[in-house]
Amino acid sequence: MRSLCGVRRGFCLFYICFPRRARWGRVDLLRFAVHPLKKAAIVPIDTLQLAQQLIARPSVTPADAGCLDLIIGLLEPLGFVCEKISSGGVDNLWARRGATAPLVCFAGHTDVVPTGPLEQWQSNPFEPTIRDGVMYGRGAADMKSSLAAFVAALVEFVETNPDHPGSLAVLFTSDEEGPAVDGTVRVVAALKERGIKMDYCIVGEPTAVKQVGDMIKNGRRGSLSGRLTVKGTQGHVAYPHLATNPIHVVAAAIAEMAQIEWDRGNEYFPPTTWQISNFNAGTGANNVIPGDAHIKFNFRFATASTLESLQTRVHGILDKHGVPYELEWSYDGRPFLTPRGDLVDAVSRAIKTVTGLETELSTTGGTSDGRFIADICPQLIECGPTNASIHKINECIRVDELVLLPQIYLHTLNNLLLR
Image 1 (cartoon, rainbow, N blue to C red):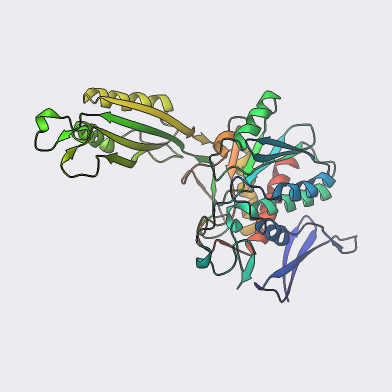
Image 2 (spheres, rainbow, N blue to C red):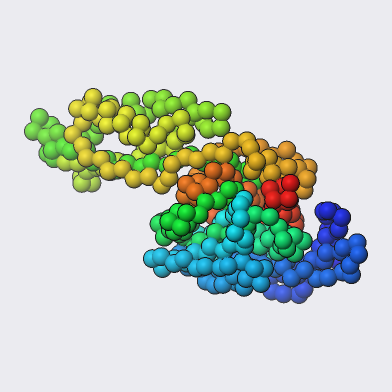
């Protein structure tokens, strides 16, 4: 038996683990809140057990597999008004407690990426398994543990502060790891139509590098993609004067775009990058000049550039080199940034209180649903568990992270609403 103790506002939290003989060495965790003038009482939400229950549901995008119903069953008794907003076979949850400002929202996703080859997993990815203080399972780090920690923090906050100022909310989707067209973006559109805006939002993406709290994301780069078709004339390689090779035609323009400095970034963002992800041309024969070349490329861009400025420069370079082309644009989201202020300060102080760490602000990495929420929320950060195993075989999270995460979220709520 082992116990973990953390002190907060005059009472002590005890975490007691009792090992059980189960197929994957499962551990049950009971939480007790001991108040100075009260007898010990079992708190009904346990982060580890809830995370296990969520991981056991095979919610591969866009399936939710009952995760949202499980969470609704825990939030409704707290006074949350829960609403499912469904679109295109995707289930989303908007739940709110309170009607006044400021509105603090926890956001995340129940869906997970496919498991990959099951035989390469050391244990069933949908049977959460604890070995040597580490829990394994698909979604353990990305991001069912964060959802469990969110709920645990909300339960404890409401229990301690039933008449709290402001409002609490959650926005959970089952379409983050996939196309992301029927998930958070639909909920944000619905809230926008109702005139609802958030004041603060914490997204539970796995942001830590070595230990919980060492890094949070206070912004993300935008993502802009292009599908370029370069027109040529097919012909025999022995008669190049009777053909036009599209690869040769576009080569100089590609070389220029590969070397250009799109911007220099800024205090929070690295410089914008441009990369070709696919280049296809030809029939497969070595004696045929291709008729067309097809190129896919992507920008990851900072707030120092805009969609419009990048598109204009690409068209200008292609036109300058006389490239005959067609170009289709698509974007996954504009960049967003939350500079130092109320939310960054609240989360940073919470991390310092719980872990003793001075957190690092970062805007690195891929996109998240924060790009949609930022449209109705001026202050948004991402804060979650370590990310070394996300999307990998044997995805996992250390059990001690499940003790720290809900406390970080709880202290953040205290810092924002009880100041």
